[in-house]
Every structure is written in structure tokens, then in C-alpha cells.
Amino acid sequence: MKYGGTNMQDARAVRHSASLAARSIREGVKVVVVVSAMAGVTNQLLKLADAAQSGDIASANDEIAAMRTRHFTAAQELGAAPDSDTVREIREMHETLRQAVYGVYLLRELTPRSRDLIVAFGERLSAPLMKLALEQDGLRAHHLSGGEAGIVTDTHFGNARPLPGTYERIKDRLSGLLSAGVTPVVAGFMGETEKGAITTLGRGGTDFSATIIGKALSATEVWGWKDVDGVMSADPRVVADARNVDVLSYGEVMELAYFGAKVLHPLAVTPLQDSGIPLRLKNSADPDFAGTLVQAEPRDEAGHPVKAVTAIRNVSIINVSGAGVLGIPEVIASVFDAIARENVTLLMVSQSSSMSNVSLAVQTVDAERTLNALRAGVSLELKVEQQDHVAVLAIVGSGMRGQKGVSARLFTALAAADVNILMISQGSSELNVSVAVEAEHVDEATRAVHAAFNLGKSVIA
Ligand SMILES: Nc1ncnc2c1ncn2[C@@H]1O[C@H](COP(=O)(O)OP(=O)(O)O)[C@@H](O)[C@H]1O
Ligand SMILES: N[C@@H](CC(=O)OP(=O)(O)O)C(=O)O
Image (cartoon, rainbow, N blue to C red):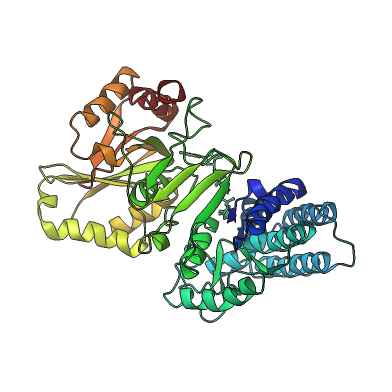
């Protein structure tokens, strides 16, 4: 069972989260609990690390002090005595965090490795709180960091991937606890390299920690507790009548997560794919509601080829052009080589059939790196231009496979909403169609598309 930031945000939320796990444990289910940082803490840690690097140690220390008060208050409200293990552990972790941040300040250097060490404290500080709440509920529990739980990763700090040996190691580390009737509480989002350096799995990575552990233990199911009814037909903050999607395939949920549905880490289902372990996303405020079941096979409803619409903001389009030049395949190869070297995620690629133009959609944070890599790596004289303030909107659903008219319906809806399309892409898997639009129109575009495919509550429920 995975609990996100909202489900860990204060003592009340932690107590409720623990009660949900306790309910299953009392029914005889063996549960591993995986926790995220309290809501907002990860962003706070990233911000204070940047402040320390830029020499502003006073603000960094103020942020740490505010965070420490939050952790101590939660511990106290959960019933921890001032001389308890929980309070001592929180104090020690905060002291180590303060020292690490001071080191960044002295060196004025924040490497991806030190950033991971700092940012993982969010999850490490949540774990003792959950352990305490489970104990208060009458259960036995033990908390572990990601590394202690056996999550071994590569050295790709900030975006690490589990190494194959991780699964055996997790089984070794957690099976004993489970068979002794002790509930392991694992700090999510983090792992460790083989040499013991702390890594993180990318934003939203606690979902990924949970599925890695689920695979290692051949879990019956992995549950992600959310503050929404599972995966919705659109971001409920944008579309008021978004409704819950009851079943999605691994492939569909990956597309949705990749194209911006914040509800799940894009790689979270990958560990489950071979074994077919189901993932359930459930609302902690309504635990008896089934939520969304994510499984190997899609379930399609006749007449509803699209299941959800989603969007990524803060996108830039990089346009590479030069008449005739791109007709040479080696040049195309060098464009992709340059991008691969920078490890940039391409959201969309489109090439004009004259081969004189390639457009690439990337996150705006990656745009400058992409531009520099292209200018340095592509030898022929090409024009490389950047367009900012773009968003990518995608419709997802396995039911659109072989269905005629889906794109037409999408384009008609966008045209009726007076939204201009900058780029179009459809994979041959036919699980999604994506379009780039001007960022300022993305919300109205999302609502228009949601309505055009009859995804709303009032229509289907
Ligand atoms: N298609 C979608 N379905 C469900 N939630 C979505 C979707 N798109 C965006 N969201 C947003 O994602 C949030 C859940 O993500 P997040 O807060 O990261 O989860 P966690 O509870 O794991 O921390 C929801 O509150 C919702 O606002
Ligand atoms: N705390 C990390 C990892 C995570 O998964 O968080 P959440 O479950 O609250 O999205 C983040 O903010 O990225």
C-alpha cells in the first residue's frame, strides 16, 4: 500500500492512512506500507538546497526549522513522548539534513548526488510517523529507508532505475518481517546505489517504489491510496465533471502518466507487467469505492474509444529546418544522437514529408540543453529555433485502435473551441493521439475534448 503526500500531510492524515492499512492487516492480509514525504516537503527540500547553493543559508535554515516543527508536531499529535525513539530519530535526521545543507552552502555546489541525499529526507522523515501510527493502532511495525528495504539502483541520480538484483534483495529484507507479523514501512521515492549512495526515482517515485516492492514479493495486488477516485477521465482540477475510469491496462495508464496525468509515476506499472500483478488506485476518503483497477488487459466500452484526456504544460517546440539538408538520413541520426546524449525526453516528434523539417516537443526545462546539443552536435547548417509556452494534450484509450474518426472528432472539437494545433502525433500502437497547442488554451482545449468524447459524469455514469 502506497500513501502519497496528501495522505501523509499531517497527524490526522497519517492516522487515517494507518487505519486503512490496519483494516486489511486485521483481515489477515500481509501489507507493506510505502510512504511519500508530507505534502509540499519535497518541493521545500529542493528549494532550500538551491538556496544553500546560492549562498542563502539563512533561508535554507528557516525552511529546515519550519519543516522540523511540522515533523515534531505530527509526532507529538500521534502520541510520541519527547524521549521516544520516534522523536529521537526525527531529531537525528533533521540534524544530518542540516549538516548536508550546510556542506552545500560551504561548497556552493549542489551535485545531483547531494540533491538526492537532501531530497530523500522527506520520505525518510515520514516513515517513523507511519510506524508510530500503526503501533498506536495496535500493530507491530518497523520502518526502513529505500536502501534498507533492498531497493538498489543505478547511479542515475534524480531519475534512478532499479537494478535486477533489487528484487531478490527486497524479498530477503522484507519476508522475515512479514512472516514475523511485523508491518514494514518503507520510505518511498528513494533507493541506494551498490556503493550505498542515496538515489531518487524521479518525481512521484513513491508509486514506483511500491510496485518494485510488489513485484519482489509477488504481491496479490498493489494499492495506491490517492486523494481522488483513482484515475479520472481528466485532471479533476481542470474538468469539473471528470469521472473515475474503472479499468485501464498497464499500457493505457503509462500513456496517461507520460502525458501528464499526475496521478501515477510514468514507470510505476513497469515492474508489474511481466507478472500481471494488478494495481488499484483508491480514494483514501472513500475506501469502499473500487477506484481504478490497472491490469494487463484493457476493457473497452463500445462507443467510447477514448478513456481519458490529459495534458503536459511547460512544453517547448524545437524546430530543426534547412531545405534539402534533412533529406540525408545521417543528419536525422545526428539530431537524435545529440538528444540521446543529453538524455532528454522527447514528448512528440514530427517530420515533414519533404524531410526539410523536424519538430521536437520537449519540456521547457530541457529546451536549452536540447538546443545547445543540437547546435553542437549537428554539423550541417541547420536552423534551430525554439517556441515556448506550448502544451501537449493527449487522448488515450485502447478502444481507438482500428476505429475511424477519432482524430477527426478531436480536431473538430479543438477547432470549435478556436484552438490552433501546432503539432500532431499518433503512434502506430493507436493507444493515443497527441497534439501540441498554445499553453494558454490548454484548459479550454481539455474541457472541449472531454465533452466531445462524452467522458463526463453526466453522460456516462
Ligand atoms: N487523470 C487524472 N486522474 C486523477 N488525478 C489526476 C489526473 N490528472 C491529474 N490528477 C491530479 O493528480 C493528483 C494526485 O497526484 P499526486 O498528488 O501526485 O498523488 P499522491 O496522492 O500519490 O501524492 C490528484 O489530486 C489530481 O488533482
Ligand atoms: N515526494 C516525492 C515522491 C512522491 O511520490 O510523492 P507523491 O506520492 O506525494 O506524489 C515527490 O514529491 O515527487
